Image (cartoon, rainbow over all chains, first blue to last red; front, top):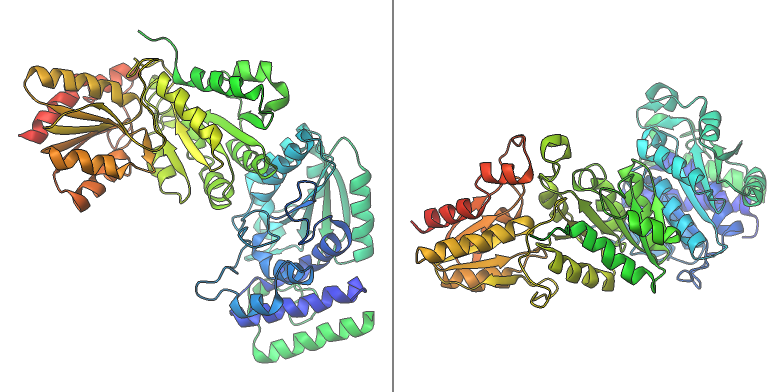
Length: 274
Length: 310
């Protein structure tokens, strides 16, 4: 499918199917982050099953590791993993396809799951690549609830200290976390200014709009002397009114009726975009 | 009396190898002075990374560097790097299997009067409990040199604890038997097995001399490799002796003593007595004063050995 906008909805369907088979998963954040993953893996990054060990490849770190089902769907599309195998084994006894990224699997660089690790790890990767004189880029995706972890801000500090213009952090700003609104749990309302004040170039975009993301990633690549953070304003549960903007869908498994409606809604998106 | 602390030896070995191996990177968290790594930062600025007082950042960045083929050595006070950044050690280094060497400096009660916040009496237990994390406590400067050289050759994560102060030599430059992950028999004996690690090895060796004067033959084992524990060395020794004493600069739970007791009880049951720091804030004083107070010296170890044999 060359139409990436429609593909993002097709991959949402795959994600929902993985969750249904595994009987669990973080569906809300899977849906919100999908365009970011599609934009990076299917349009931008120099990464494929053929060059996954090439030191010049681009690096991707899924810091919000709980959105692993969306990540699985994208890695399957990219040819790193087999969709039928992932779907049938996800979360099953003895499976490698666990509920967070597992770097024993092809395509996954680092284990994550505990939040607040990805940014500082990506600072290390970006720094190492600079030391090695490489021109590749590192992308890291964080959740907005994750920003309450102090280690994230240690990473923001060191990223600008070392002028890592080969590093791009993306915040999946869906404004919901497990307990409710991020602004009620731990507010980030002045997020743009906060990150800017740490010495980063900051871009705020519609994170479910592939055109806007493409422009933001272009701008990030063109920005020299400092790292870039893209605040991707997204909708949690994006794709179906059944789950959109509902904190209770952070890791809800759809019922049979909900499943039917979600798939119908996603199909309509695909139809409209095709 | 030797006046070269183990931490300085680590810096010397890293500098020697960094000349030819540009992948060696040293990271500090405002700790280059206390780690004796300032000369490395001066001589190899391109291979040095300062992160400020941020241990979580320190360990995660080290893991990221390892991901790109670097060989990071991240040095920070043992009390902080083993607990403040414990999860980074667990997830980013051990679980993701990154080639990160964590150097816990000023370990145990090295910081003396600075109090419990600065003492690392939990690091062995904490680090040893992480799958794929190794734990080393070298006993003297000679062994430290061999250990760091061995660690430069492998690509797995490890935690190394050293003290702040120079320690008396257990070995000599010409005679320092070292085999990676194999305990060193410091003194052969047949009545009691004394197993020690880190700074406690030298007093254990001295205790053997005191015991010898009383006709007691003590075997002293330097278990610098606390994990992977050299179980074979323990079993081989304990099979021929009557009792066991363990000595460590660590809390009484989850450290060398606990691990040795597990091995002995499962394979060759004998009485095991442990010498360790108390399960309480440690009394104020220099390392030596603290060790003397808690019987962590040659006299105390000899006394405990006789108790074990009684």
